[in-house]
Each structure stands twice: as structure tokens, then as C-alpha cells.
Image (cartoon, rainbow, N blue to C red; front, top):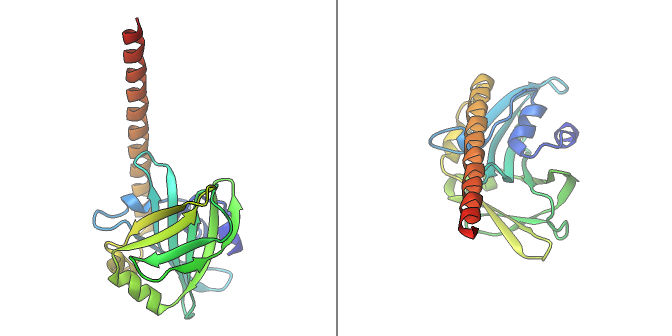
Length: 207
């Protein structure tokens, strides 16, 4: 957990790869044509056990970070953990709420915040994973500075296939990350050009 938190990454998918010894970041939104979920596994040399994470990262069309989650499992251990990251600026108390579809809400306390995100760990069980497999969306609800709920919805489309399937190759993740960065740069360039064009139009109409 310490290595995960000390990375201070913006998303669990990114932090998961750092913790597992990978060098690439990945946005789950671009990971698979059928599902936004990604599965990564590696052996932790400290405990000599395989650690697997099934992750999804939620971003806006322009690449702004909104939320990320990662289900962490360690080989030979029944304990499972849901790692959650949300943007800073949210109320620390009373924490956030986690639910599948319109089901029961579970409270998740914040563990630590960095300049780019705040993190929480929630212990889960097989029953919760079963809900994820049957559900359509995972909802993380945080409170903004005005104490207004901010629901962040992560689709569960394809979750079962990814969760039960083989882990993604690190090289493939690196390739998809490069594609993602290229796409985000393209979108940013388009948005900047639209702003420039709009400013020119306003200047011309003002004359």
C-alpha cells in the first residue's frame, strides 16, 4: 500500500503498473474495444506472490482525470481490496460512497491526498465482485466543497470477461498508452484551434 500511495499518481491504473514494476501508464478507456477495464498482473518480489489488479480510469474527452478504481487481489489470499482515486477539492468528511447500480451504498474513507488526487481503500469480498459482474455501472459518489454529491459512473461493460481472463501484456499496454496520448494531444489541439477561431470571429465582429 505504501508504494502505491507514495507514487502519487492520478489514477489507480497508472499507480498499479508502478507498484507492479511496469514503466507504462494506461487509460482503461482505450484499453479494449469491448471494455474499458484492464487486467495487469506481476509478482511482488517482497512477498513472492502474484498481485493482480483489474482497473478502469475515467477521463473527460479532453483527458481530464475524473476517477479510477482498481480491484487488487493477491495470490493465496482471500482478501480483496478496491482502490479508488478521485480529484482533489472534495470534502474529506464523510468520505465517499460506493455502489453498484442503484444498490446499497458502502462508505469508503479517504486514506491520503496528493496534489493530483485523493485515495481510498475499501475491503471487498466475493459477493461484491459478483455484484460487479451482474451490474451495469459502478458509482463512486464524492462531495464537492459545497457538500453537493458528485456521482462518478464507471461502466461495468466487459468487466466479467476481463476479470476472469488473462492479464494484458505490458508491451501491449505501452502501445495502447502511446495511442491514448496521441489521441488526447489531437483533441487538445482541436480544442485550442476552436478557441483561437472563436476569438478571431469575436474580434472581427467587434470591428
